[in-house]
Length: 336
Image 1 (spheres, rainbow, N blue to C red):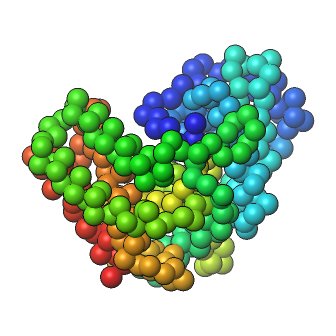
Image 2 (image 1 turned 30 degrees about the vertical axis):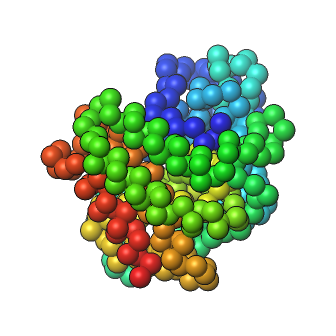
C-alpha cells in the first residue's frame, strides 16, 4: 500500500477537547493546554496538541487500513537502524474508543521546516551547503537498510510484497499510467509521448543492471523534516511521515529536494547534495539515467496534479515534454 499515490486524504473533521483529553488520559500524558492545526500537516490529518507533559502531534483518520501500523513499523526500524531522529514513541490506537477511526500520537520534535519564511530569509550560503550535506547524510543512513527485493510492505506479515513484474516495468508502467491520466486535465501530445518513451528506452539498461534495493522514504521533502541550530551547529532534528515508504532505488529519494533547490534557483546547492550523496557510489552514468527517470516520474505526477487542481505555477503554454526535459536534464547534469 505504501507505493500508492494519494492526492487527497481523509480530514480530521471536528475534534472535541474532551476527546483529546481522554486520549491524553489513556496514556498518562497530562492535562491539555492547547491545540493547533499544523501548517505542513499530512493532508489535513494532523494536529498539534500541548499538555502539561509536553508537546505532541496527533494524526488521525487513516488514508487506508493499516496506515499507522505501517508508519510505526518504519519509524521503529529506522530508530534501531540509524541515528536519525524520528518521532518515538509512536503510539497507535486502533480501538476506536475515543474517535471513530484509528489515530496515532507522537512527540513533537524541535526545529523548523527548510521552506519556512524565517529560514528562507536567514540562512547564508554556508548554512545551505551544510544543510544539503546533512540531507545527503540522512538519506545515506536511511538507504543503508538493504532489502532482499523490490516491493512494498505487507501490512499483515510486515515483509515485502514484490512489485508485479520487474522493478523497471513497475516504474515504467506507473509513469505511463499517470501520463495518460494527465491527458484528462491537460494537453499531452504524441510528441510528448514520443519523448517520454525515448527517455525510458534509453535508460532501460541502467535499471536492468540495478539489483540493490533499499528502504526508500518516498516523500523526502522540506515539509517532512525539521532542521535545528544549536550553538551555530545545524542538525536535522526530525524526519517523519512514512506513508509512501517502500523498497526500491534509493536515488529516487533525492528527487523532491533537487526540485526544491532548482525551483529556488539554487542549482549549486542541489549539485552539492548529489555530490555528497554519490561520493562513494560508482557507475555514475547509470545513476544519471536512473535519476532522469525518477525525475520524469515525479514531474508527471506534479504536472497532472497541478493541471487538475488549476494550480499551475509555470508558463501554461509550455508543452509537457519541454517543461519536464528542463528538470530531467538538470538532474543528470548535477552528476557531471
